[in-house]
Length: 298
Image 1 (cartoon, helix red, strand yellow):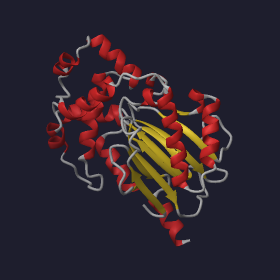
Image 2 (cartoon, rainbow, N blue to C red):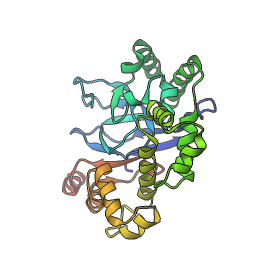
Image 3 (cartoon, helix red, strand yellow):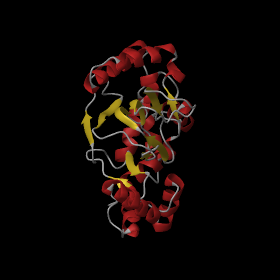
Image 4 (spheres, one colour):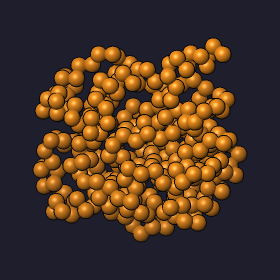
């Protein structure tokens, strides 16, 4: 990606049970003159994110209106693709493991699903205090340490949490037939109703929905977004769909476009983000290729 530095880091050991990885992003180019200049497409998944963002002067995606130079927000688990304006000059993104956001923030995941909300919506004044301490950091690494310390203090101050969903989500992602969860339910030691309740509290949706999204993520990671023609039938069969039609219906429902239309759009406007998993987030330009050409020539 031009004019940007992206660095992926593992979480500190005490946050590792809840956090998958941390992304540091720094723009090295000039501030854009339009808004939103970039658009992040959040791929459906069971992970939540805690995001610290330094906005370009005068540009903000704050849905309530008004401009904020610094923001600390929570992006909940996503059941469908979400567009997030990308106007920041610096980001810290803490990617939370599927099923871990309730334990990390102390709020039910059902309050976060398919939403992007300020952290103070859940924590109140302590979130504002944490943001102030983060802002005082002299660089992005210092700001990350302050954020991690704030999250760790929160985790240590909560009652011991039931980690069933964290472990169950990992089992579904890696070990089970996504079309048949009966063996999974039989091994949990809980009734189906109890499992559903635990998933809704910790992830915001049930195990069947999570299995559906997990299968889609695996297939999505195998798509070569730079290629014009794709073997959709082979991909559908390889990843457990009944046929290509079944996969196309799933793709349309989760992404809001057909597979061919999405790939075509990415080939026109997509911006590679080295090191960032394709199954998590994609970056699109909000300019057409003609606009890019004019900008580079002028």
